[in-house]
Every structure is written in C-alpha cells, then in structure tokens.
Length: 154
Image (cartoon, rainbow, N blue to C red):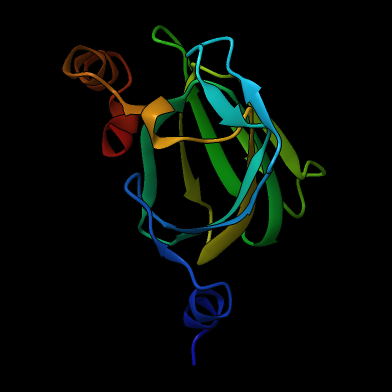
C-alpha cells in the first residue's frame, strides 16, 4: 500500500471541504466564550491534515488563531491573504521552522511542496464550521486580478 493510502487509513482521514484530508483528534471539554462570535466554543481543537501533490487547501478563514505544526513529508507552503497582500511561508524539514501561526480572520491556503505533507492544526478557541468561510466573489476577483499565481487557491 502506498504511503499516502497508509496515512489515510492509519489516521482515519476524511476529505475536507477546503481540500485535502483531515480528522479531528482532540476537542477540549472546557468551553470558553468567543470574543468574535460571542458564542461558546471548546477551548481548543486539533486535527491531522494531509495534503497530497496536486491538491490545494483553498483560501478560507476561521475566526480564531490557527497553529500549524509540521509532522512529515515534504515542506508545506502556507499562503496568507489579508484582503490586500499575499505572504508565503514554508514549514517543514530543511526549513528550520516546524510551526506557523495564522491569525484569526486572515485567509489562508496551503499546498505540499512534494508528494505529500502531514501537519497538525490547532485552533483556539476551538474550531467550529460556523466560524469557517471561503473567499467571497469580490475577494476571488481581487485574488484573480492582482495575484493570478494564486488562482488555483481561490
């Protein structure tokens, strides 16, 4: 069995709406009130997230800070879009950085720089799909017009 298939099976990963594969592995029992939504959220959540060559994690945002941790495979390219500018970061082996933080409310996208990348993502307060959104049509137009090299992420 191929390495990617082994990872999907071993960690029981499922397709994610933004692209790639994931499985939630931790959801804190402790709850806090989100300063952004005003609703209760679990204090922290954590997922395994797998991207394979040719797939991308499309631009999306969550309300709260997200911490990305590199586990194995090729380095991961993380792309941030704040509505005006785009910034790239690389995490993983050979880059001397195994973690990156995406601030809540900032659009993010990602892709593996090789055959596959396995990372972990923690969100605090915890992730809830109510706090998740893709680019609006207007934001997609901005990306496609001003940053055409990122069209595949829109």
